[in-house]
Length: 68
Image (tube, rainbow, N blue to C red; front, top):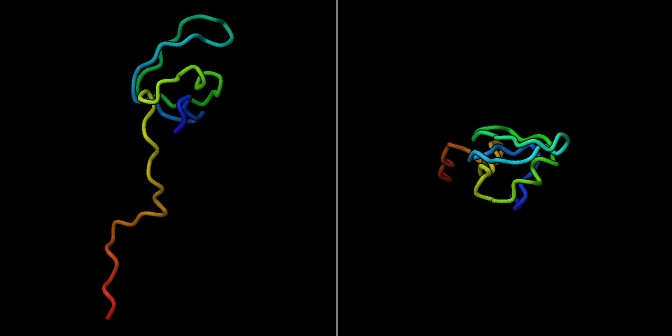
């Protein structure tokens, strides 16, 4: 994940930013999905973002069968 975080990312920590339109302080709680790229751009600490979830289609909980 980039330092600015992607739009659509989920916060791992509470952050304080300025509303880009009204210029008033906003508090976004951990677990909030940030969909606005202008807001995501203000959150520049990479530890504020949850790590990307692994692609479920690529990982399998099953062990491969042994060749017979």
